[in-house]
Image 1 (cartoon, helix red, strand yellow):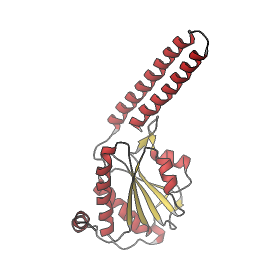
Image 2 (cartoon, helix red, strand yellow):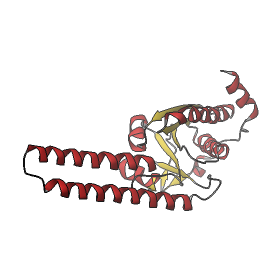
Image 3 (tube, rainbow, N blue to C red):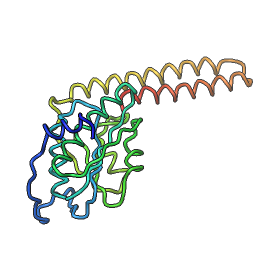
Image 4 (cartoon, helix red, strand yellow):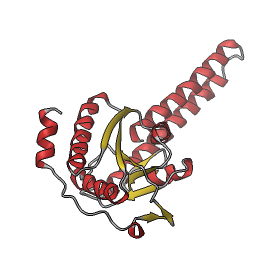
Length: 224
């Protein structure tokens, strides 16, 4: 273990507490989690209270006697090292509390695909109520429930400030950009349709459609 890890473990310890009685283990939507072997914790690249989040995750793992797998995603290479450092800190804190933990940082923005590739039998997914994604900026927990057959535990109240205003501005910017892309592409395609009907027109139409889809994908990725 490097000096950074040792320092974190010495200064950020989590006091041990006795395991809860099985009858008091948490449940969500009527599900019981006695068989949970590992917590798959989806850590956002956001303004999260990481220390409080780590404690909540550790408390849940302690009650369920489960291992912890922290996972985070990055879209910008400049954020990778920062996220790795943050997950090292979180891992060190729970390990100092006698919980087994690992960390993984992956490139991308599709949480469903990442969870599918890491999900194992007996896992429980842990995410945060404030996590949103996709074109409609839906809560991540809803998207995971509709795409995965696995228990999901939602942690809330761990963002220092309410992100509602930021979310609304992001939604406005997202849809303004999408409408602009679709409208601009539509006008361009009308112009192309007026050209002589030959192979050149067909190729230009195909290129315009592909460019429209690519722009929509790129713009959506900025807000996913």
